[in-house]
Image 1: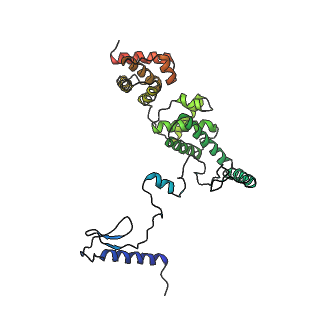
Image 2: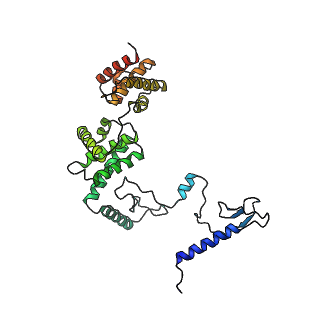
Image 3: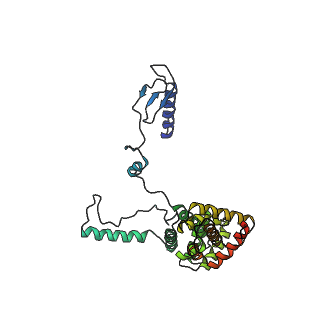
Length: 318
């Protein structure tokens, strides 16, 4: 006779255990409501009698009572991330020349660790394609840090750049241009208000190239990006100008009324938001000069004056 396989044997054992659990009853109250609690003990749900306390606990051997304590005791690595060319799956060597107990290493060990770090950096990229990807993702991380955008935007920008790389959209274009366009597209996709001027300020390529590359990759990749809402810029601009919540709500109202009359079509969202903030500051007696608002919004005073006149007329003021 053939011996049953290990999988069959495990299935039989599981079936036997389930049958025993189903037919088990409490010797005190004859109840069949037997449950397994958090400590892996068989307990009668009616009277609370513990029937079996020697079950195998498949959880960790340590206990934690809050999230921070659980995180500090966890021994798993960091999650996979798209912001690194190897997705964070390779090993890293710490730059500190200390052992596990915090003691300084000897000169011989320090030179050995220096050589290991050098070779670790060399073997992380196997060819020119991976080196270019590593450079592009590092550029996205640098610009995202300068813009102060959250981690989710960096992840989305890295995914967009990888898609452009797989579709062979980078051929004939600079790595910096495509990475900057991917970051701007990620900001648009995640609803983070960052204008093209702000992205160009932290980039190493001209604004015209960023806009041209952005339009190309968004069309080729089929990115469904909605027009930028000027109201997204209001909280950040108002915070930089130290304006109150009343001014922000009034600026939002001005934008809504102006947009309903079709004044937003073809206008720059940053200039439109800046003009609404300027008008709201006058109406709420928290006056700011056009130069102050223009410096924060990175637009010209002429733009603010033109949009301001249109919005005031739309609101019915003269």
